[in-house]
Image 1 (cartoon, protein in one colour):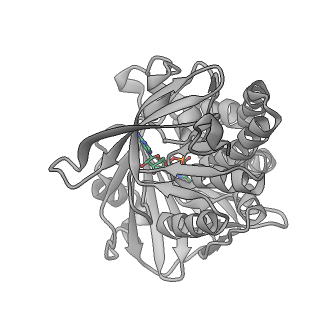
Image 2 (cartoon, rainbow, N blue to C red):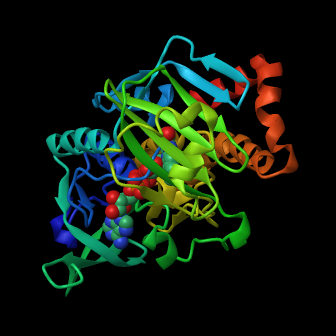
Image 3 (cartoon, protein in one colour):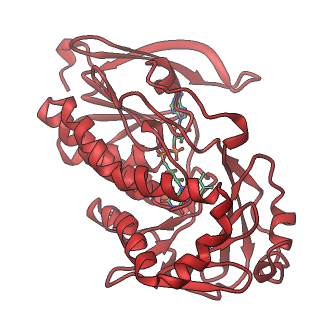
Length: 363
Ligand SMILES: Cc1cc2nc3c(=O)[nH]c(=O)nc-3n(C[C@H](O)[C@H](O)[C@H](O)COP(=O)(O)OP(=O)(O)OC[C@H]3O[C@@H](n4cnc5c(N)ncnc54)[C@H](O)[C@@H]3O)c2cc1C
């Protein structure tokens, strides 16, 4: 950091979710003075399938983070009568509660020397030599945010402020949203249930996909993807394989939702601001690799900053998200088409193709 230039840090990370925390750790490892701006107190929960693919787990290990959870040995697709499974090769994934993941990443970021500012970003201005970030303090006023505004600045900002990224909107990097009828949403809940499998099970029903992920020895998470206002209980009751378990087990977390899932961006950098994680664009949770892709982006963004070449990040983003954009978009298109009911039978009939796609997305 160069206080003579009036900087508050070398790097400001907006958003202290998993990808923002990973970026902060990468920044500290690269010797940068890092401030994370996050309005919420941790550990932060979120609607998520909570399946860390092998590549996501490897990225966490590289960062020195090893959250506890339940081993995930592969992925299964199921409908009422069929099942196909693919087991990962040597390296397993892990089902990890978001709160556990967040606590582990936050602890590591703080140990590495990142500072956390509890505030909300309400303005961003990228100038030729700096970024000025306007903060609203999280206060005790009725709406939770008091009127105190102040500005901090740094040579670089990484925006990791999630699916509905305010920074992306402030910098005019958003592309138009999809028609309402095509939008997909996610909801999730946890059940007190001993996991019966070490796979992430994806149950395909008429309109929704239900993801079952073991997250510890006594807890199973269910995430549902589908149209807006899907009723989770009714949806689970309509899936014969899930009607007994977990639908009949005690729910131990409140419902959480997220969406619309598809978020498109016109660019991932604006001057000295780099978008990472869901803020940089998101396709769908159908293939469960948001965290893996986000951690890779955090690494590339910091490398580009250290090199002083933000354009490098744009190139890295394109290559890191290619499979996610292509394969996931293709699968979502099939899921919304009249061919939807053919997805599981095709995967059963072509297990090698199914395995190749799973491996490609899990790397
Ligand atoms: C239903 C569902 C299931 C999923 N399942 C999986 C899965 O199984 N595996 C997987 O890898 N991925 C999965 N994903 C995707 C994964 O959850 C995301 O990719 C991941 O959470 C992205 O992390 P992030 O840090 O970019 O964003 P977030 O986790 O959303 O964090 C963003 C942070 O920014 C903060 N913020 C927001 N506004 C501001 C502001 N103005 N100022 C400062 N901070 C701000 C927020 O408080 C938040 O803490 C799933 C997603 C959904 C919706």
